Amino acid sequence: MQKTRTFLALLLFAAKLSAQAPYTAKQYGYRVEKDLEYGVAPNYAGIPTSLTLDLYKPIGDNNLQRPIMVLVHGGSWLSGCKETEALFAVELAQRGYVVASVNYRKGWHKAAFVANPGPTPNGYPSNCLYAADSLELIRAIYRGQQDVKGAIRWLKARSAQDSSCNHKVIVGGQSAGAFLALAVGLLDRPEEKPLACFALPDAPAPAANVTNCYDQNCVMQLINPTGAALQRPDLGSLGGTLNLNGYNDNVIGVASFFGGVPYEALPNNWLQGPDTPAIYLYHQTCDGVVPFGYDQPMTTLSAYCNLGFTPWHTNFMHTFGNGAIASALQSMPDPPPFTTDFLACDPFIPGLALFECARYGNNGSYHYAHNPLDRMQKLADFFSPIVLGTSCFTVSAQEPKTDLQALVSPNPFVQQLSAFLDKATEGEASILLSDVSGKTVWSSNRTLNAGENILFEQNPLPAGFYALQIRSKAGVGVWKVVRE
Image 1 (cartoon, rainbow, N blue to C red):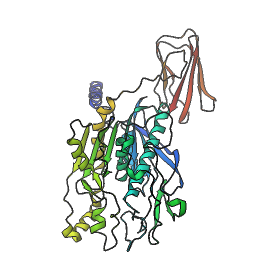
Image 2 (cartoon, helix red, strand yellow; image 1 turned 45 degrees about the vertical axis):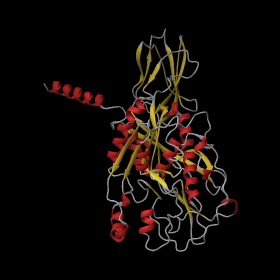
Image 3 (spheres, rainbow, N blue to C red; image 1 turned 180 degrees about the vertical axis):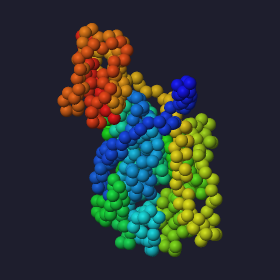
Image 4 (cartoon, rainbow, N blue to C red; image 1 turned 90 degrees about the vertical axis):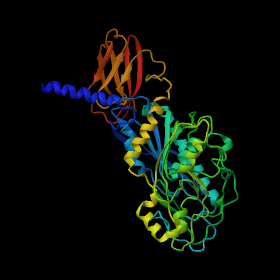
């Protein structure tokens, strides 16, 4: 009787799992590869900048065509770090995504004169948020989205290594990172290049009472740009110059957490293109940092809660927040798939600034992902059918010019590795597993049967890449395999 109850419970559990759409339920372990360099590019002051990412992968999903999620952190295009996206990255890797959390070029030129620079809300030097002009912020967004597109091409080129599908790529970000994610997905035609990103006159020498600060790979940098460092050259093509390896930087989805687009995006019709991706939009309606509708970022904090110091937002460009983007999408006759996840909150009342600034201070300016686990579930539910509805090119797991036909699974593997054959080998087959140096780390000689052949069930191999070779009278097969 106990065995019957156990069997029925297992059946119910299996039925529950089968009812869940793929990539929506947390069901896998994960591992992280840290600080992988995907390129080097000059920052706003011409300083070469190493660009790195952290790569999160599921364990135990047995999937050779994993979707890719690229996450972009926030920080006013000055600060922030890829590690801040770890929670979201883990949540998505446990659902079956390969997740890249990326660093990108940050920083922008400062104003030539500031009467009375005041404190900033991000813990940086008190005079770091005064932009030379609104064009500087747009140029910062443009450089950042070029970097993310370079990371996407880098990821696509190694899809076999990561067991990913390079046609199933989604990009998402928070705050400043959401601006970059939206630009990655929507800037898909050369004529959409912002005017600010062509060659401009040199930036002014920064005022003596302001500081040029920015993060590079999570470490604060302080510089004093002069001469050539103040030049503002043409920023080049939409996709930039990183990893021009033959792969495109197209994405099928964008997730914007309290982000937006610069003022010229909607008039110039960024939303309507040949490959406009599906869009998930999250925002709290009274956000005090990135406006839900149309305004300048940080107006609430800078104009009303700045304790008499010179406002820092006045040189920020006007932006359309997620609320304005949603309205534009709703007005389109044939919009791309999109969903809104908006939380209503009481707007800031300037006439009661003393009390309202306290309320905003106590509530993080409403600029954060409320209940982030719930947000991740909504995002996963929205993108699951889009991922499933996107085809991958059918690519054999085998290397080119392979005579012996077999499927090697699971790949990546942890302990057990099997080879599935349509028909048995004639006589014994020689089976070798080699590491990246060519050293044989495991071997066997045996007859392989039609169907599954368990090559081994336990192994002491370290995580990494290996070459599996099977040689028989039918020919030779070589497969790339990954030990998780």
